[in-house]
Length: 429
Image (cartoon, rainbow, N blue to C red; front, side, top):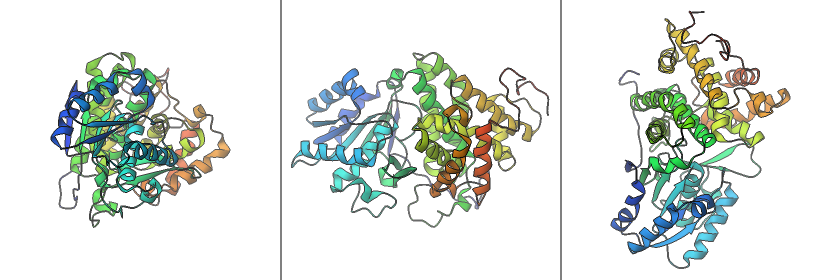
């Protein structure tokens, strides 16, 4: 993406980013330096009961003179109800003493829950009061985020995603003040991830990188005149992060999946996830995530898998719109086609091959979806308007419909490669 006066740049990230093995040890001294007296640790029961990390963190905080309040109610796909229940539990334990900040440890769901609590604890109001706007009564509490997976990028983003009972798709609390004060990415914390979680998180990261690389340009996004936009379309800086994330992801994901204790591969995926988040957390996402939310509403499948199944079909649909970008992705993935459109088509096929090697479904039938459910997925995906409006083809309705139907039938422009010719060596078709 060329640097030009036509491409405005808006970029926002955490104040501090640390990638370091053993980075957990930095937390307590930092909190003390900030003058905190009481910290709320947000995690789930796996980490509080089956690892030593939470106890070590609590002890370090207390030895630094801080009171540590534990909230281990985190769960996959947190709901607005869970957020309010967690908030009431923490407020009851705090009593008359206010919290100075929060420390989140876990996957993206735990970090999202902590973001929600940073608002509800600060203002003693339900999370529903903060959805869909930033007209908040004040700033949230500061947050320190420590991811234990390499995928969601929630330690960088301005949003927290929740399931709202009665809603067909997920809802978002969004604002730049939700970006963590400090993010500590410790590769050693990701060694606990089993292969399936590693695959899910890794494909989430690669989806973030690719989707943000081929999203709408900043000059067309419509956020140029907003005072403080969370998402503002792609720009040269976001593209730079996305490109490097894709390169690292294709290099390291399969190794991390197959060799869980390979710290070099784990470190690589930490950077893949972080760079992807630094891209999409300013540029925004579009069809893959919108349709993934719709699929999750039907199947309750994991975010990484619902993203992965749509990613190749969105890439394929955009091959003639984002040809140069997808051609570069194709070459990173291993395409040896001589022409850009062939490389762009291979990008989708090779991405789908990677998804298959990770043991994930590569079409909607693999999720048990029936053909009569496709219209609901299309409709619910389009209803995530903040994502649909960022799709490079506007209006997106016809494109979404074709993508979903191709994802159901497993149809790509490049024939399925499993057991057949490898697009890295096949001649131009």
